[in-house]
Length: 352
Image 1: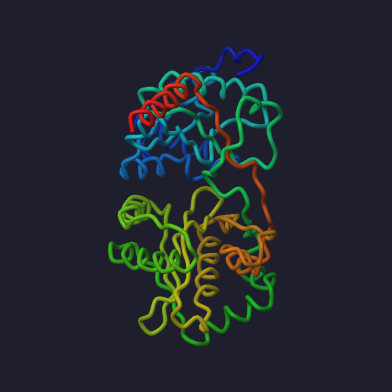
Image 2: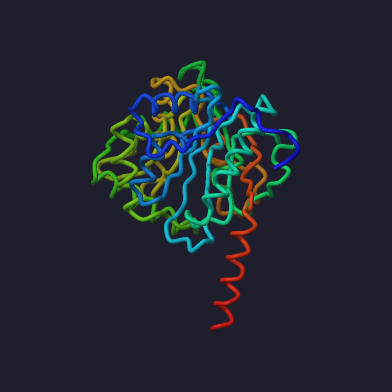
């Protein structure tokens, strides 16, 4: 990794399967919550959901004189045939403000994952810490990934002043549409049942077709709702009018940040502004739950007007948040494993 020698007091342990409610799980999640460069995808709760969805979860802890201070949760898809990635969205969880300590911890994480790469069917480590600038030269042996694990451009809405001040601060059009939805009888329902998962997935399929992107299968939403809603980590909201679902969203609340992870509006009764009512209800709910930031999860004010995501960004901009740009996703390739993948692929092509 580089010239720095690892800080001698630092050690690494494979933490195995961590129960979110165990002392270790509670300690880990507290470290993640308080690290501004991390987020819910590094939580023990999210790891439990991914494990139940069929992913291999590799949880490594970094200790300083036997005190846990960081590490990473890596996710690997099964049956990757050696060409997969050990992905750490929102991670690794490191003290990035202390470059020497952070680099020492990263060195250990790389060494450990590299030694386990073959058994885990992975050719690279893929990381995405929530940093706004590269941390010195720590990532000098990493390369920018072609795909992102999380949204590198997003919009943060500061919730610290409460709903009344927020409502005064948003654009007049948004404020008018929120009021219009209320006057026209749009209601907000929160539900975490299996039927809610089906309703949500049905709407997401409609949004995906309309905007030209893929949507996860129903089983993903069922697993997410069953695992995370009872814990208060995930919440599902519907905007409705006279039995019609106008919009729906899935919000994640972890630490000080509430995140709009999935959602969209239907083509039904769009003039009732269900999307505005939905987000305003979610923002108020996030305030009530103690969140300090509402993350709109994806925002690019510079996208071309005809881009399929342009409408999303225009809508989100109505709430007058702060545009955030992070460093994105970075890869470290395990060269021996990568060579095996290339050789295997060459042989398969030669045979066909």
